[in-house]
Length: 143
Image 1 (spheres, one colour):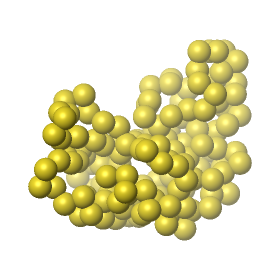
Image 2 (tube, one colour):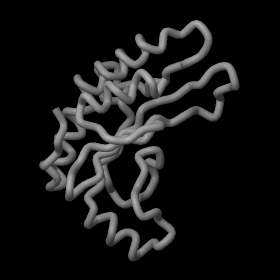
Image 3 (cartoon, one colour):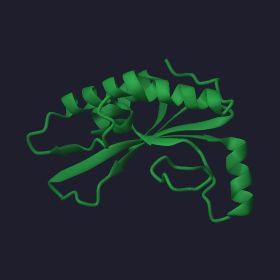
Image 4 (cartoon, helix red, strand yellow):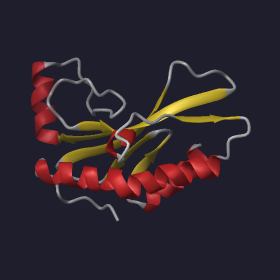
């Protein structure tokens, strides 16, 4: 999946690989991650797309209070409890439903990647941009 999706994300201004990506910003982490389901098998992988925007100053203060937090947040963990905006890509669509994709035998990976890229264009990037503006992190390099 990464062979198909990573190039599409890079075209949209994301850096990263292996299911963890971010937009370049000096003030925030604008994150996108692929979260695998525990119900996947060796033959099939089920995953969703998580988004998060975390102000770096807010994160630094949270780490002072909770030193167990990692140096850099991950959008795969939506439960840090610091009030940072997080969302699943599917929840931003008109269906407002949690969306999981299945990758396995017989699944056209390019079609899955195109669907995800389209949803990111239509819903993910506007949400990230709005949240970055709200957090004072409006210097994204997203295209």
